[in-house]
Every structure is written in C-alpha cells, then in structure tokens.
Image (cartoon, rainbow, N blue to C red):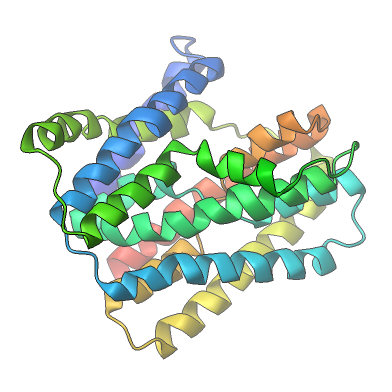
Length: 303
C-alpha cells in the first residue's frame, strides 16, 4: 500500500514539476480536465458498473450525501454569516460538494480496486446533485448580481454533466441486468486506463502553494468547519449504520474528501473577484493535501 501511495505522489509531483519548468501550463489543465470528465471518467464508470453487482444498500450513499449537503449548507449559512457577501458565497460553494472523480478515484483504486470504485461512484452520484444543485444556487445567490436562475437552469446543469448522466445510465443498466457489448466494454476499458494517470497529473498541474495572508483567518475557519463536521458525521454513521464495512468506510472517507473542483468554475461564471477565485483555488489545493494525508492514514493504520 505504501508503494502504491508513493507512485501516486510521484505522478502528482511530476505534474507540478512539468508546470514549474514550463513544459505544461495551468491552462493546459483545462483541456486535460475536459478529457477526464467527458471521456476517461465516463468510460471508467461504464466498465466499473458493467463488471460488478450493485447491492440495493448502495442506493443509500447518494441519499446520505444529498442530505449531508443540505445540512452543511444550512450550518454554513450560520457559521459564515458575518463574512462579506462574496467571501460567504465562496465559502458556501466550497462547503458543498466533494472532489470524487478527479481526486478519490485514483487513490480508491489503489486501496480497494474496482469494488472500491463502485462504492465511491455511488457516492459521487449524490455529490453531483449537491454540486450542481446546492453549491450552484448558493454561489449564484451570493454573487454581486444575485440569484438569477430557476429550476430549469439547475436541471440543465445536471443534464449537461456527462459523468452524472453516465452514472445514471450505468446504474439503470446494472439494475436491469443489461450488459453492454463486449467490444464496447473492451474499448471503454482501454480508454479508462488513462483516467488515473491523467487525474493525478492534473492535480499536480493545479497545485499552488502561494496564498494571501488576508485569507488565513477564513481558511482556518473553513477547514475547521469542513473537516470537523465531516469527521463527526462520518464517524457517527460509521458506527451506527448496519451495513458492510466498505459502505461505512466510503461514507467516512467521502465526507473528508477535498472540495469540488467545480467551485472555481462557478466563481468565474458568477463573475466573482480575482481575490475570491484565488481563495477558492488555494482552498482546493490545501484540501487536496489534507485529504491525501487522511487517506494515507486510514488505509495504513485504521481500515
């Protein structure tokens, strides 16, 4: 396991090094992320769901994530009530949602293999609804222009999420016991093989260790809120739910994953200031580092 984590860290470091020596730039990451979310990740989901049996209990995962997202939003409105409007919007978008497809999948596969991906895929279904629903609404509401969307706008956002639509289609096929043609799965399997290295390179490409001192206080407040709440709820559900250890571990670890990468995209869409977008990018980097450490500790010393 330590060796697998070493490989992961090396690939992330390679992405960061390629940026530092100007072989790749952060703007190249936009293309790589599109390849991941629109091609390799959907291929991985189709292969994963085609080869495993989804237990009925797994349907509990997206429900838990969605309920947790609502609770987090309500608590966040109280915790961050004294922050300036745009900073509050940034913190609310960061609080709601998790980076599952890009961050968790490579590490989960290294720890639990394909079975682990099945559980975290179901977790990501709920996370997608939180990100494109709750986080999107909150980000829009606290922008300078204020809320300017309706339910149809949200449904369009959800419908345009290729990973989410792939999850839904793959789940329906799995529950219906319908298998895709072998040739299709074989091609998808080859494509999905690129998902993990591309995701790890992208994480390294977006790493940035610079941040403004003015952000220190809201950073500490946010990290205490996010990880404190995630750990408390995660441990509570881990010990009381009457399901298998993999499902309970998915909830516990899932609630401690980094912030959703889409928060930065939303900030740009809602015309947040440069300071706000920089703050969101910084928090994304910090939570990635913290979550890598958490996953390492859990996989080696706890689970």
